[in-house]
Image (cartoon, rainbow, N blue to C red; front, side):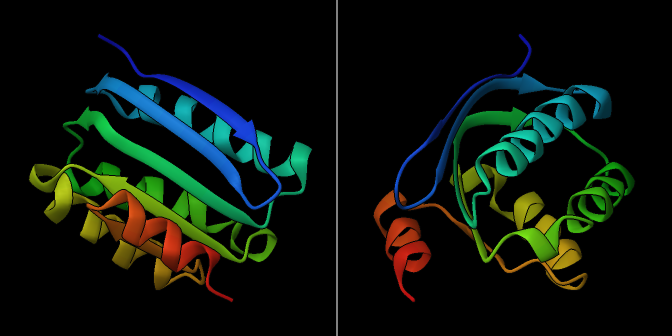
Length: 122
């Protein structure tokens, strides 16, 4: 199963809901590039990604490369909240580390409400 997603622009943030399974870096990059394009088209400053039902088996190196790619767009956004499953939290925290070290203000959560509260807090 590949990654499927829906992206909607709300008055408060760009809302991304993703699900499925991405086992290859090119699948995950395609998803991330769609989110980046939506950010650019909507001039979105805050991004909410619900990835609770999304799994991927990227290597640490692939995660690092993906984080570097995403970080190039850090100047265009204020905050990014990503919600993942508890089982994916360690992998996602590494992604958070890579991207935040490159200037992206991102936080990984396992709770939807907590993530939205953080995202909407000034």
